[in-house]
Image 1 (spheres, one colour):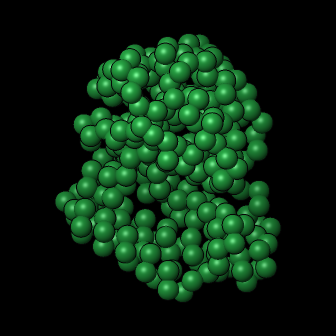
Image 2 (cartoon, rainbow, N blue to C red):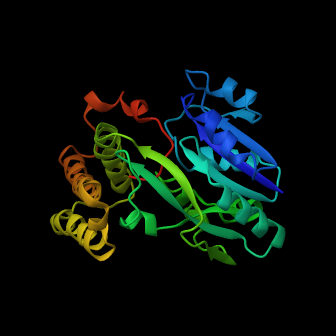
Length: 281
């Protein structure tokens, strides 16, 4: 009835625990590995998953690798899970009940993200659910080329009905950023650069106004309106860093325009160093 699909690249430290957390939910676990350099695939197979391989193209999170993984699933319902995520017992029971009920084609779920040694729950990102549990047929039917954009792997499900959003009692634990260093390298470095490239490819152009207003708007919403200040110093650090990420995304777009759309060669070989599977930034 339920398949859990996990896309991986060099996740040997995470994959076994991820699979173990999903076993109470899944009738099948499919690990779609992009030819990892470590033992991810063999560990996944020993843990009971069915391992399929996908070419290493640089697309770690979304688009075609996700679609390929869903195509390999054999059950009616599918849950997207990343190797650094864990299914909670409460969520597992809830999703199995919904699958048996068979009413919804998409179920929107929140993630409780680890940031710098704790789990802030008042930042805006915890309030933003994603359609991570869905009917396989609905996903494949609604998929289009726009879903191949960076971090666009679940956007195909945004208009799928009927849908339901679970309360904050049901969530996925995401071991996102144990250190500030990882956040700086991955989000401020890799994500801000890659998403600026995506914006440029889609025809978006630099805006002085949005480079200033996007970070300020986010900080005001997440830290003040959503109560991020209640997460203490961790909440302040997280919201400031995410606001800087929004600034850097526009700054990178400005630089791309200055360079005629050509990224400096010094960074071309470094994208794989950010390999990972989370969507939280």
